[in-house]
Length: 387
Image (cartoon, rainbow, N blue to C red; front, side, top):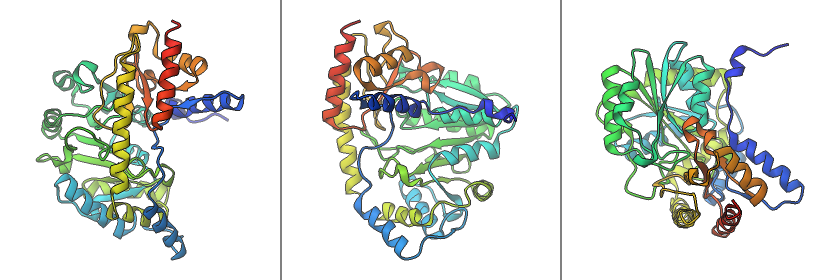
């Protein structure tokens, strides 16, 4: 029995593969510091946990509407309307188990063979994986270090063709921590409106930002009808295991995305949806504390990395990743990642995990304690000094 041909086009997330290697070393007695996984090291705030427990005790253990409880969709609509300064209602919201389904469903609903999708590279690997899976053509737009991991607007415009069906953007970005400027967003919006192209805007890190205020392309004139806004609870509220995310989109598209939910997951878990209401409407103190902790870690890791021979690291404006250039060491990305893991006991990701333009870089997550980050940097300095 053979699998369908499309399965050969399906990619993966290297983070979980590197985690498996690191766990195998730990099973052999090695001490490994984990800087590979993009997961907050904080606990879900207590008020959210309590809301979930109460929901379970109150009987929220059954199916919900495929698009999500109306009360959660209303809460999300109010939150997005306020934070993005646009007018959306529950009919524009589809609740899903995590953020990935919005990527998958949006591409599945809109893109066919022969269509082209522009996406950031280096970028979150699931974009390219899903584009390939549905048979569309991935068109990478290179994020450039010299532009603070934004891209060249003229280069971007040159990629637009009559077959361009979707533009994927991610700001703040994984893996670079970069943020698209308002000028970038305006240029993308102009192209999208002029060519009637949908933009999938991955805003999962919108609350983890250090410099200035978050800006969404959905807020720009004419873009509400051209934007699928992806956000969720995993990063902001340290709820990665709860599997709760959402998309905000034009009502006509929300109907199709909802039908894909019906055909795949049925619905997100009922009690997690009730917890999501508490997350958005309850106290935000823990989020602020987490972001402040990330800021301190960012400053430490950037300062220390830039002192290592052959490393060059920009200070990220958002998310919780650094993406240092390691070309000065003379090593390729995967070679460096393996070297740091096996020789230094530090798990990081090669830049090529995020696309061809990630060569020459590695990604480190600073979703770890200051103590562990300092220890990891000591180890990196030591093994690099041997080169």
